[in-house]
Image (cartoon, rainbow, N blue to C red; front, side, top):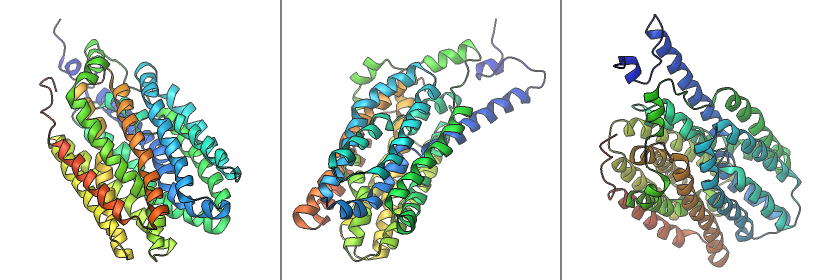
Length: 419
């Protein structure tokens, strides 16, 4: 029997009013996006990454730690993310997203709040950050991207961009909020408040609304199962080019972001102005994500990636020489634009080149590369400062590495014909 037009578009072959089922499906799809946005807003990739630099100075001052040794905590978290991401991805490919995301979010929120009990023993700091790394990627866009992608095809770039705008929003609001909490209530109470926010804002919406699209027809189910196997993905040069762009970009951007606040305050910029620069980075990241989603639905993804990674390289180069609030804010804005684009492009390219069959596992493996590089960046930034008292020379090298990542995008081929 020939399928109806509705069945060919993956819609239920029911209803006397054609528009009602379509409206219900569209409404459910955007509710998934909205819930995922708030989940990503309070995730590891937003809350921990963009507050680490704000907490760095008061913690090192209280416990008399070097910046290199304290920054190593971020490195431990990132390395743990690197190890655990493929396993989390495998779970996401096999189980309901809520069964993975909700436990990860609960552990993440409680562990983050527990940093309020931090002792002078560095091992305590490292142990908590390892726990944060184990569950971290289950709270980020990696946890939500597969579920969102099952609801969208033509507008997939926009949908993924809106989800990842949660990270941009977090980067925009968490630095000044964290600085305010530290200034008025101390860094210990700041950790409690932010950890509680994860539990209050993230868990209920995810539990209520985040799910994959039901297979309403055999054609829909087949569509969701299409794509490369894990083995085929790992054998593809395309996959490793994507990994290369992430690795080079991650070393640079994570090093710059985690040391942005201390870098600017070392150069005479007030802590409040440094927090504003970090907030501008978040706002630019938010704008970069929305813009990238719009562009991905209209232009070839690797070309979009090339432009945005080049902007990020320019921002890191400017940060190397910034000695005023205006320069610091401009550098942060350029880094944020590129960072937002990089986050959007990776899952989008994976779905276009490899489909959804092993998407989360492949995405988890790209996170392994991203996290290893992310562990290296902050530590070498701290090491550079401890040895020379300056970040400038290393930032110039990191800008060149980011420019190299932008050129790798130009090596990617056209999408497979099936797309």
